[in-house]
Length: 359
Image (tube, rainbow, N blue to C red; front, side, top):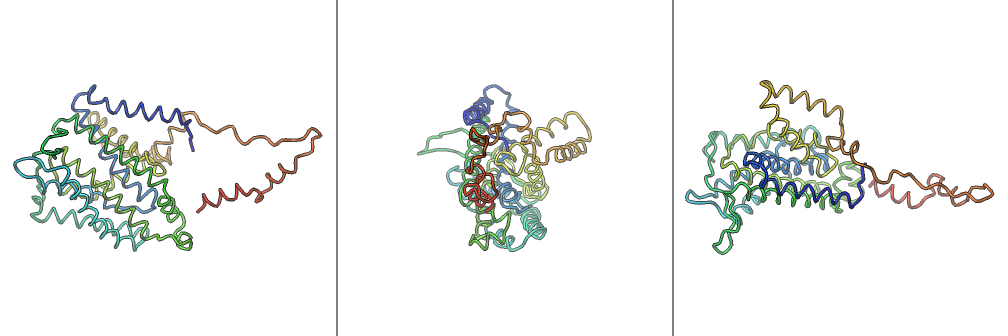
């Protein structure tokens, strides 16, 4: 695993944030809108990775949470103006959390391919609920003519009608989601979730509440996907049943695999890579989907760990010096302490570290 020096890592993060924040000041509006869309899809991929990469559960219903939050914004937006951001966003996330709790409580009683089938079935149920009924305009969807209003005491704080302001809001939300995901993964909750992924029976024998761990992770993941869906509906001013379809869930899953499942930033990188690849191929080839599929297959075979593996080939490593050489006395006789350290099973620190990593 690649390890950068802390100073270099902080420098790279700072440069990336500065470049991202300065994009609306330097690029045309089209690229600002495109970057906002890519960040929102990266947020969905980030949320799915909590379930797939760290929970070991392949879900095909995350698009339903993405679209449901968008519809909730549409329902709460009046015809004369924008909905209150402080009211509509919590309501949308609460609705997503309730639905995700019900779906997760039922789906998590299955394993493997059955879990995939059950989540797919629930996602399609929500899709046809909006597609075949008059809820939300049926198959035609519904328009959202005004973006949410961020106001305090009657004064507008941020005008989301400006693409640059909306871009900065999405960037802040993405950074917040990344920080939240990092904290979850590094917390005892995240360690327990990964332990259940690696060996469920052993995790149960150690007393971990595996079902509750996975249910909480499923609901948190759904709410992050709902946040992205809420902002996506606000950006494009339109929601349709296709936002809840399994095709979008499968596309997000490809982003997770493409970027790398064993890291927090991997799915975000995969989202940018996939959306950028589509944008390039659309303008150059007629049968661009076939070419996109071949490129994705080639990347998966060449980089099993995702695109983030490229960093190991480019960035310098830290800690490659190897273990320190054993100290030998002047007479050439090996130090007994060194022999004890070299003997397998006699280093208590190594044993403790190995057991902790295993659990």
